[in-house]
Amino acid sequence: MEQTLVIFKPSSVQRGLVGEVLARFERKGLVIAGMKMMQLDEAILREHYAHLTDRPFFPILVESMTATPVIVMCLRGVQAISVVRSLTGATNGRQAAPGTIRGDFSMSNQENIVHASASAEDAEVELRRFFKPGEIFDYDLVGMRFINEPSELEL
Image (tube, rainbow, N blue to C red):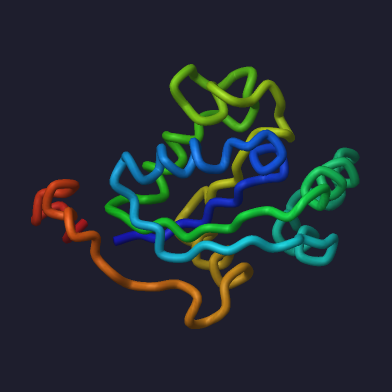
């Protein structure tokens, strides 16, 4: 099963949306393999958003992402990366489809509720960035057989 990183951004923390957004992931059948609250700083954001550091909006991104603590989470499931990306919707909340997390809760490109890993490679690097060894757990939900048909677990 795949693992992916989700960051509940300050916009979700400040607006009291963490529980509602988390419930969407759980109802879909994703397993919470790790979760913690932390305060981000510019150094980790420069690493995490290295592809954006030269962009004119990077200082605004840093200001936004350091405004409050965030919640980082590792979700696990069959094709977890694409499932999470589908649930979150387009990056710009104004363009995200209704029914997606950003489509329902965001009107912004930056204040868009969550970050989600874009690929398996990104997920692996990002999970190592935000979680220490021993902070991600491998367990099965008791009701897993009601979430995935057994052959799907081989994907």
